[in-house]
Image (cartoon, rainbow, N blue to C red):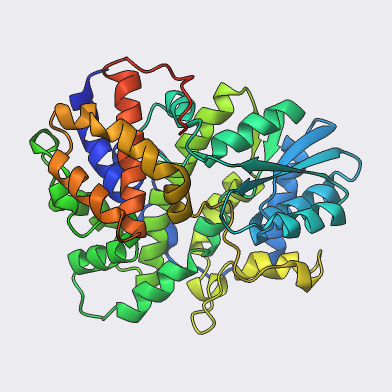
Length: 403
């Protein structure tokens, strides 16, 4: 593998946690996709679109569903059971050590819809990182979907999920609130890009430019150039954020990663919220229909539809989804694993990453548990593992990272 061909991807992944350079532009959303339009009976249209995709694509008598207990997966579960009342459903929830445990909520939902509930407890989130990276062929560290798909493949030949709810219906409320509270009307497109990245502060670090060595040739301007089209248009500030998110999080991150895992385990993905109809329809809904700025609540249409199918006390207002507490992961496994693999890192030796920066912040993290730098070291670990598998070819993908 020619590493220089991946230079832009590496810099983007280590700065944004996704890479616009992997896009072939065939499915990319543009500003015209988010021009607001009047939509009558939109709740009925959304529910029918989700149900129709379930009706058409769920053909087996036994399916798995990724169930986090949030609005998206719960809505899909409810419509799955309504549309296919007689099928066997295995609901799968991931439980990460020393992180927020929402499996009890998911269990109640599974019970409500007569599904078997399977909890996959993951003690060391990094253990199977080499295997996951060998499958996706990209230096991503957040590969929790590997565990989901691997487990689902043992139960059925298809996996249903609520993917797309956040991107299509305004679910990243923490980002919207911060962006809008710091936005002012005469900001230039570049100022808006910088503000947007400030709302992604856990994906990069203040001395980001010092992280890279000479061979990387890192430039913030190169990063800005990939994002500025989302903010150099006539859309409202919030719709510009929606546009940036749907490309960055959905098209450049979740879809390519998840597709790789589905293909590897020969598992059919069924994503009812990401029907072709809703992908075209939902972006044109007025942002006020999706997001309540005063209450900072998103996915309003999905919540309203769900309220018809399930008691309100089972709908959590602030769902985190499948997420790992990276500070606790660092303290339990991450620190020792990163020290081991980055002490004699190939990415440092070959002048991609600054070894002085690595040593400085590894020592600093012993004193100050800064989540931004923890996340960055997890990204560097993924880069090093990817490098050893695909560039130096010295690591077996079956290697397990443990202490």
